Length: 127
Image (cartoon, rainbow, N blue to C red; front, top):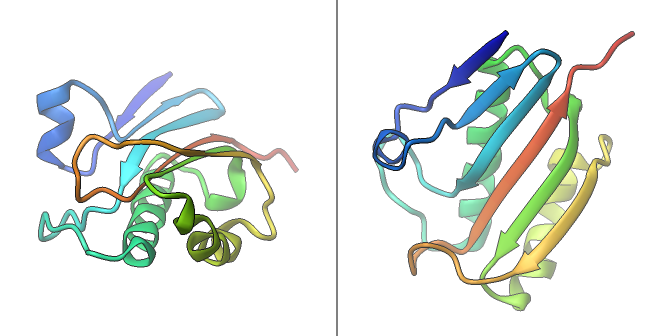
């Protein structure tokens, strides 16, 4: 069974994607930036953006019947190598006990105000 999860963001419809897609025991969460979707505003700091990314991801997972503990893979995209040491503790708060396979890449993102984007894959735990 395929289930599409939305945050209600106008970007999802405009760009033709879902925040997350559930297929069986898998949940694929799209790259998520630091927007506060309630206000459609982007915080200035990478810390606040990272926390918003994680909150949006947690909600998408929950809406799909998953938990953060189900995350098996994470991709982190940051726009400046100086952000590595800033976001590591925040990511550790979210994933320190879960310890998914992960990759961090320094790159340019779609808009200049974006400093971090996070994408995760989750597999429903059995037992």
